[in-house]
Length: 112
Length: 113
Image 1 (cartoon, each protein chain N blue to C red):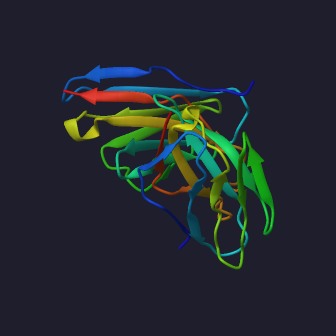
Image 2: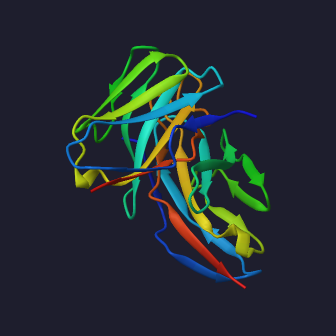
């Protein structure tokens, strides 16, 4: 069945460092891909999305490209800030009509 | 601004109590979902509903039930709370079909003592 695998954390970085969080997926068809972010004590909010192969989603300096050939949707940011400390979830749309499929989440901690 | 609102941010309940978690969305979404979130386990789907009075079991429905009497409201019920149900509970909604963005509530941190 469809599934999402994302790198385990925690990821600990200094401010202004480069960030990559890996996400790979298994899916039939061409579902949409999402990155969600969860700040401490909050629910999840959409960070970015891509709906077809080679699409690039971007928001708040974060980017991810839908790569069909490598079945990946890695999240990147060129220069992280302390305020980016959060849990990041990769998610796969489910064209069968049920719920989004989430990865287990990666905790990012950025220090000044 | 679109919203999914959960009735409580924090709840403390006793073992054996019946617990109701309420979720309301104002986006006229067809689908609504309940997840629980635990460290190291990510989000696990408990139940979802794709229409009023319709419900489907998710991955971990045992010990839970749900109710959807109106389109905008989806309730999660713990029939007899147990300590292993201590968790963060998240409600979400989407338009019909699941290849669309999910909107989440702020979460309810439930502690069963």
